[in-house]
Amino acid sequence: MEDHKKFNYQSVLMPILLAFVVAVSLYLGTLITQPQSESFFFPTKEQKISGLNKLNELLHFVEEAYVDTINKNQLLEKSFNDILQSLDPHSYYIPPAEFDEANEPLEGNFEGIGIEFRIINDTVTVISTIGGGPSERAGLLSGDKIIMANDSVIAGHNITNEKVMKLLKGPRGTSVKIGVLRKMKSETLFFTIKRDKIPIYSIDASYLIAPKIGYIKINKFAKNTYFEFLEAAESLKNKGMEKMIIDLRNNGGGVMNAAIEIADEFLDQRKMIVYTKGRKRNKEAYLATSKGNYHDIELAVLINENSASASEILAGAIQDNDRGIIIGRRSFGKGLVQEQIEFPDHSAIRLTVARYYTPAGRNIQKPYNEGLDNYRHETYIRMEKGELFSVDSIKYPDSLKFFTPKGKIVYGGGGIMPDYFVPIDTIGYTMYLSNLHGNAIFQEFAFYYMEKEKKKLSMYKNLNDFKKLFQVNESILLSFYKYAEELGVSKTENEIKLSKKIIQNRIKAHVARYLWREEGLYSVLNEEDVMIKETIKLLSK
Image 1 (cartoon, helix red, strand yellow):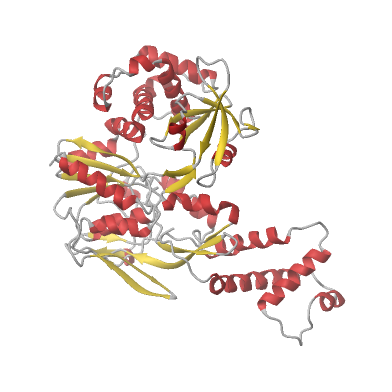
Image 2 (tube, one colour):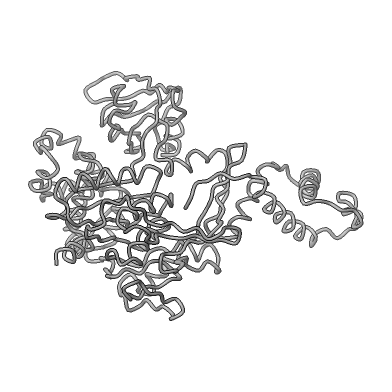
């Protein structure tokens, strides 16, 4: 969602309901052939009927005459999404039951008990507790196995992440009683935990990745992202940062204003950041202010095929103003602006109301006129065409050509094309490696290893010591292969030979994650990241 505003729901809902009525009425008209049936349930042709009255009549007709029992509200709710998704891929309806969950990533917090958990061997296992959160205050520990929540048993083959979250999350101030199994304790431990607001962080990692080069990984754009970014950037500046890498790979977007505020930090006053325009929305331009603290810092922005929406606004603003270099692969291509309209029953719609345009005047929305399935699988089509492997496979018509102030050619019509293309790295990738990722073997083994070797791992005083000294040796690898085999992921000797270096890096990264959270994960992964290496090389020239 590119913005987060509330509007009068009746003014938006009315045309949607009318569209629904017309569509369904036309369909029913092909089925109802007996004149007496039509005149019995509906007014005659001479009688005038409003859209809403027609909808009521139609629902009454279905309710009274349909062969099976129907739920009128469910029928209506389904129709909302059908209509909205026929408009474009990013307009959709949010039912009341899903409203809070849909907004949590944008709000930057949720209400719950503050744990990270995984379901390991059909058991909910606490991976970590949020520092200062309700669970840490109550005394929960990493490795605890949750077997009960209030009166519900949460273990066994049928347990899912969704079921667990439904039991543990809840309004701030309410309580949940959980039963826990803990190592070295023979009896079940019980904790009553009062739920509270739990932050959802937008920045996964920020550290000096090379001498004088700072690295900031942004996973989404939420209401708190800009303030997180300022804190991270200031910390790096105090450590001697003179150049910055902003990693937007796999960042699907979020709140548009967060991207605008971050772009403002790098651009001179009055420079265009982005503008929006729609059929019922006048052109609205967002210009840089004088408040930015990083006008002179050398900047690189990383993108890939999963960087979308607000990520593309930030990348486009930097590229079109010749303010930094964009590195990676062509971004997703979402150039539509949604607004959220909330209804009294706690449901909402997110409706596309405008397109956004980069400073050079390009709209980077990719086509969506070939259906929702084709739109969603377009990145797979890119791979099949070879685009993720070679820049030469990407062809743009001259009609989509635009120019930056310094004369650099940029293109609209389907994502941000980077200044420096880095192909997807397939060296060492095998079906075995794919299955390891798909079955979350790295995460589960890292936790198993961490629990087993806590004393040994406690010797590392900080993340830098761990990165320098910890090695995934043959003994750890053999244990890993055996663990994966027991979970149904088998290997061949050739696959091991090809993927060994990546497997070692992934094991080390996930162990680091359990010890130092996301910063541990990315700081280890980045050591073998081809795009990161290329970026450091470019910034070091």
